Length: 435
Image (cartoon, rainbow, N blue to C red):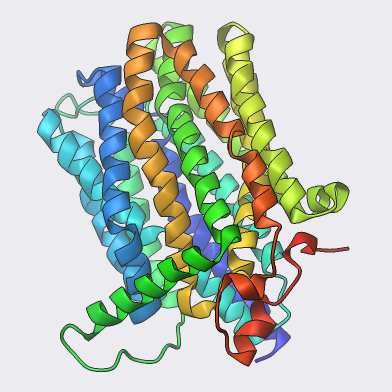
């Protein structure tokens, strides 16, 4: 492979990241408000979010193992098709049971979608150049994702104001457009994601058996690696705090503005700006690592700063407090993700990469599954401010766990390795990135 191959992989990775996340951005300003407009309470919305997380918990490891076994491309294509079903149900549903079905299906989509594209990039980049700077690629991905989510959120807010036929339920248009763009994403995946993987031996249940073996091996890595365990625990607590931000922010903005349409638009603009600054935070991740002295310290600073950002939404009254807190949270969101998943990738190899990413997503979703209903009930009983305050505490709590991720050698974390695997992960993970 050549440097040109590595550049082609990176370009395709960034394009696919954009097409994958833009439809999600369309849903950000309208989703929770749509549920409330169609008669669901804040507590019920929290339960739906918890249901989605529960489905991720159930399917995260099996789908991660499947991506490591049959390949990243087929799993991503299946995920996109499932996403279409979920969004179609949300578009015109009025009955609660249909929303339950939609959120359950959406959880399966998130489980399938978690990890394969990122894992494909790391594998392909290292195949093209064994010394590839994967953190730089992941940082660029975060910038692209932020731009896609921000642009999608802004468009979603504008589409929410467009008059629709009387037969359409409230706020359906942004989701209809998201469905069309998901179809475009599937076409890009089909044409751009090249993958060369050995075929699974045998037929019938062979992929299932191989996937189960991969999962067992990945879980075995956690038993021998304090670093990987610490990283998974970070995701558990972070996912709990993030659930509060996702469930409560749109509702809080509508409550503060006092008008549904204006609140949705205000939240859409805020989300668009937030994802723009998140992209800046991701781009600045290598600089933060240099200034703090390591990726571990950068991760600690970012997690604390996220909690402080959410706390601002409580301390400063009115829409200004929510906007400042939301922007502060997402300013360091990109930095935190780059630092965290850079450490995850450095502690594992291609054989278990998608599965180990799924382990982190799984623990994050477990946190959200537990916290979303609890925070929804708390906000319904004690007010939205109380929900934000607890979320801020949950976001700060995992920061010290990164100190455990800085101990031991990566080669010890992944158990017995081949010589090639050792070359890939046998790096001092406290000194990643440019010097």
